[in-house]
Length: 457
Image (cartoon, rainbow, N blue to C red; front, side):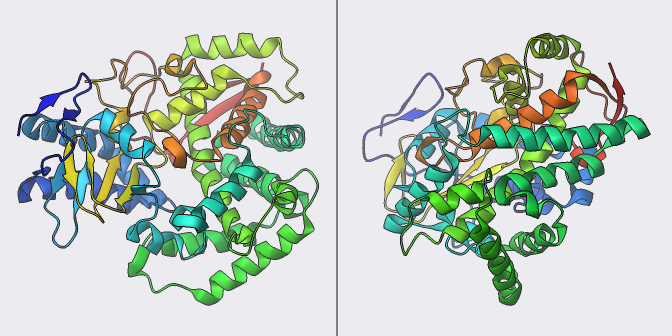
């Protein structure tokens, strides 16, 4: 069958499509060893800090990028089928194919896969991410009604800003007193913000509640290999139900109470995903702080922009929004995006049978020097247009109809916190590895090891 290639490397064939090229067993093992295993080992649902530190030492994501680049050189850029016994698994190698698969979600590329259901069912068995058909549509409508994904500023932006600035002031007071800012302090402040934004002020210090969710997420790291903890899950969901029933003013819980729901919505089980998603967003925000602390030109531009703003007023700060997006591009918080075909279809001109797992390794596309000249640099200008993705294959919050509905809330909270930290303070990175514009950024960066010196300016 005749086959040509588009300008982005996507295979162009007739509607029927040819079968995907099959990777050899040794090449499949290389993908599993250097790409997939490190992602799984670090924790897909909740990070394992010790493994993340080890991944930084060996620069695991740099190895992932090299492995997939070699596969593309060897097999071409059309989707590649891995030699996985008993499972049809396809690896996209062209950015256009990534965009196509995500644009055609949830049908025929479903967000719900057996692997994802096995992981997320530990704490949210009726969540939209692992739903299909009418139930998924209903739960997505509810989620969008609460999170307002099309609005850069949520209607609750004013109380959110008040919460962020209050917690940032306390964090800065500690950092000024000690002269240092590390993940323990930042992460604790971040989770106080998250609990207040999602559930209300009464949840501010309820670390036991989010610790319970962390335990369930830890079980989710093992997906179907973990037997589950139904009693613990029931306890968590009941506590969450009680907190949501309070519908505290100014919190997302208030919006939950006001959003239309049906018998199949299961509103309580949509909320854990928001708490879950805010966790890696904190890691991305802390890494963004490291980028700004080590790139003088971009930091100066931010400081100049902030000087003319009243940050107590809710507003979009494009430079800081771009910094968080760059942090997620450089070190994706969702390094593996999964889709499963619901029917026979094609991708990149290749025929895929139903129940094919499409495995998008975003770390490869985000650091692909063949398509991104500044792949290993801090390049916030990539995100100058906040309403559109700047290049094919860049998927910091996924893409298409199933794009993360909380992306704007997360970006707003992260950029507002960065604005408050940098408004009247100098922040200097004191930990390794050394970052800066004079050298390529590492493929893997352990946020738990970052440490800053902080002083009032």
